[in-house]
Amino acid sequence: MKTRTKRITQHSACTHLFLLVCCYICSAIIALIIYLAGGTDYAYTNLMYLPITLVAVTRGKIHGMIHACVSGLMIGPFMPLNHTLQVTQYPGNWLMRLAIYVMVAFVIGYLADYYKANFEQNLRRERMLQKAQSATLFSLVKLLESRDVTSGAHVERVSSSCKLLAEELQRLPNFQKQVDSAYIENLYEACPLHDIGKVGIPDDILLKPGKLTDEEFEVMKKHTVIGAETLLKIQHKYPGNKFLQMGIALTRSHHEKWDGSGYPDGIAGDAIPLSARIVALTDVYDALRSKRPYKPGYSHEKAVEIIKQERGLHFDPVITDVFLVHGKLFQTLYDQFNEEGEVPLQ
Image 1: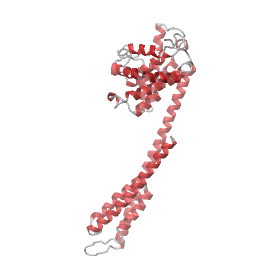
Image 2: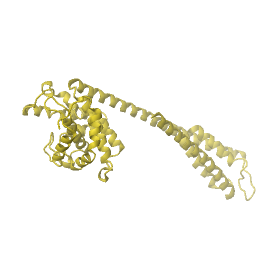
Image 3: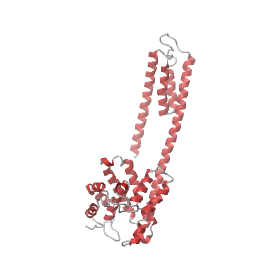
Image 4: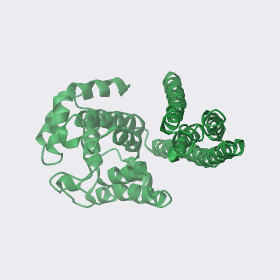
């Protein structure tokens, strides 16, 4: 990261230096044009405002004022008022023009420096907000882990699997407009929130070793709404936050099914947010592979077979196909995160 930042800084410095040199060359060319056009008696002197303004905007008021002085001197004491009539300029004329150039450079450079400082301050605030998001995310996930010890590794595996699946979807023409690097990063960061609503589920249901009764399952299903509504309250303070928008979508809808038989809203097909469709598949795959008090962990082959049977029913068929094509990658990823050393059921 430090090396990359250093390269970006060096590239930016080279770009600014190149632009500065070009502006000085431009001023020299304009001075030549003014001389060949007949002198400073004509309107061509106004062309000098272009490089002066460009330097002031890109390099600030100090460089802008220096460039204004140089440009003013280029068409100052040695530039005739009228080349054809051999009339020289009055010192007061070119000094006044130089002073105007310097004042223009100062004003433009001052405004450029001011807005640049504001922009950099906003960037710092945005970075601080991102750090606060990460800290909040970490705290919420740790809160869930304190109640359900199996959730920690599950969250890490599902997040990494979602990122992997989204990267493969990005290669498909139908997804390239929606799935870009920012989308993938937001998905990876927001994915750990998908089960955060479980903090509102009673322990006797959340930690029950056996199968839930119908009544208990109805209570368990509320975790999607609890999580989404919690994040929605946070979003009211940050209405344009893409991270929270995605977190709300996948938290509420990751138990929806392609055929409309899921919960909590019973939506179907493309009406289900893409992020939730991605999480739905990776979440189920991880649950199938993992050992639970009420079931053993299944092998990769058995989990894939179950997912294949749910293509077009539970899962988006296109996303399912991408998963099946790259199944070995997901198997490797799961095995890397699985530290229990359990023997899966074939």
